Length: 460
Ligand SMILES: Cc1ncc(COP(=O)(O)O)c(C=O)c1O
Image 1 (cartoon, helix red, strand yellow):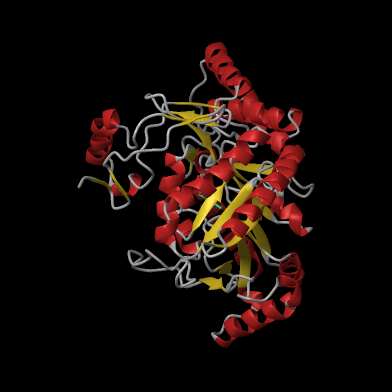
Image 2 (cartoon, helix red, strand yellow):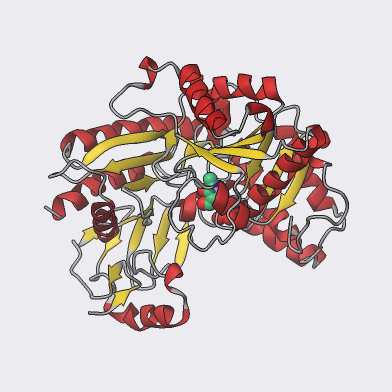
């Protein structure tokens, strides 16, 4: 039977026929007419690019995605949690077209231009007050690499042995060499012939079965640091802690007291607290930046995705004294702060402000939470938990027989959800992510979550 990578069978299966204001399912999936296109994809793309549900994206608008065969989905992916202001927002389209038509400036490298400076100034005005410079990149992983380099330069200035980096187990920070090593998943690291032995993954602040409010998080941190000290690494040797501001796989926040304890400890030892806001920034969680939920300062912020909601642009935001630690021509790339991306990002930031998307993310997040809790109550054996903030939500899935986390069920449920008219992506973890564009209509949000219940029911 033909298979799309090792994830989804390319064999048309019946879908429920659905016609609502937001969803239209009128063919089997995969669509028989699309099989040739899917086979071409499998032939030409490496397997790593072929693990998402076998549907063809053709058009997208707001929180809606359509294929060329008459099917239409409510988008719960925001692509990969990036289209915060929705797909193809007219203002972003116009801004991009205007920039291209008016200036013809479609490549720039490290020269100055008005649009790039304007975006940097805008980001500085939005960032916490101590962040007065913007180190631009193209994708989130590069921003993480840059922050790692800056952290090490910061440490080197203080002491020769201050180069150790902490991060949490199960964090995700990207796939480039440094970002992959900072990521806390131990899986798939066999290719690293000389892993960076100064990157350490400490336990994520969560104790199974124990409510966060009953844990002394300062003591939890102290215990982890004591374990590290037993291996010869003292706090004075640590230059930075990277924090995935909510763990993306399941939209898992950290306990506020824990992050505050980290901040106090970092201040005592001149350690940089680096928030990875690549997925969580720009109103996604109901704040402009998700670390605001913790009430602490981040020394550096890594941003990407939702900066533009569309074209690639990423950055490290921070104080000049840190961002100026690398000299001219030391680390830059050809496409950083691409002028067309800057045009898109400026329009995107206007939309976030003018359409009140921070407030909308809070309000719609409450609707999502209510519906997801109802889903958990409907399927208590399959849904271990639902978590998240704003419109970054995760359904944690367990095997109804064993009670263990169940990534296979998550995959099957994802596919069933797509067949019920809700666009989902495979996380490859025991979770389904619910992260629609922040502009989604309330009714579509409710309808989509309820359809996930129908989808699970169809698997029984
Ligand atoms: C938290 C986080 N950090 C970093 C990255 C890497 O960003 P990019 O895929 O743009 O390189 C991602 C991407 O999903 C992410 O979610």
